[in-house]
Image 1 (cartoon, rainbow, N blue to C red):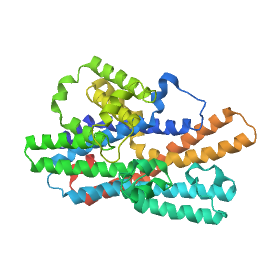
Image 2 (cartoon, rainbow, N blue to C red):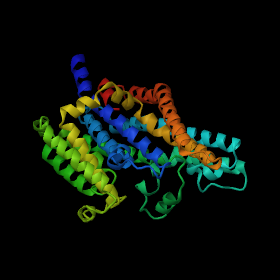
Image 3 (tube, helix red, strand yellow):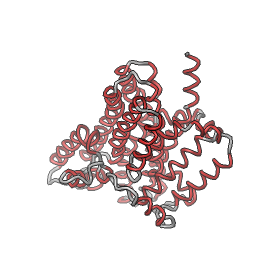
Image 4 (cartoon, one colour):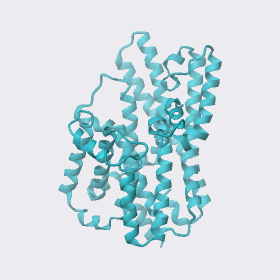
Length: 395
């Protein structure tokens, strides 16, 4: 049994590597926003943060599908375990952003006008600002991150009254909009896997078609597709078709890089009109989601791609991917502050690039520390809560 478990873990190691690559994409995306004049050209996919986020969602749907084979675990326990796993590290990230912002304001009062995540919070006195952002951080940790979500990414954006409230809320840490989405996506997949146990196969397949249709234009669609891909055993037939994998990768590259120039606008606008789920994504997001799904499928059927993603560097990035995703934003906030000072004193961009590199290395170092002492602790806590050993590989 132990050998089988190890074989299964090895078989899915590439998912961790893919997560790590995605985290690097998101970090580069936000870092390059500080250098508007820099363009990567044909290599822009290396910093395609939105694409990486949708790939994250595909991975989560694929991995959570493993719960369909664990019929003895109650659904409420599974959902609460996801809360432990997601929201403890997210709360730490919010507090880190608040502490960094507060320190900058004490050492340099004009930082209030520079810090991007504190935009809109400009009371007349510094202490009023800090108190306002502290209250905002607390509401983010206990209300917005776990339940309401972030602005247009919130599933409540079209609700009366609540939607307007969510839209006007200023998030302490904008990257955390994905945490609420991932929670609701996890709940959906847990319920689908539970129904798979209770329903006949044919009824379950029709249910998946219905859910796929209802979520087609929502942020939950990649979760559903990831779940479906995990159960399409006939995909094994295509694992050796390297040319098909290459074709799919190139197709997704064209789609995601041309998402903003309207080349495929009419096609995806037609798809976007099929359903009116909440929240409705823009045509741009629909294209990104489609490209992410194609990339995920291409890697799934390519032994070579999965082998590269199972390499030691990718697995290292995969381990720290969640802390890196959560903590890079506050550090880039610090970089934005430093760069403003650099501009004020007339230094050139070369110094800014060097400092950006140092900030990036710091992000990796802090992420390692958070993984060892916070992230891993939240993982173990969720596993201890669930107790059954079989679940350890899917959280």
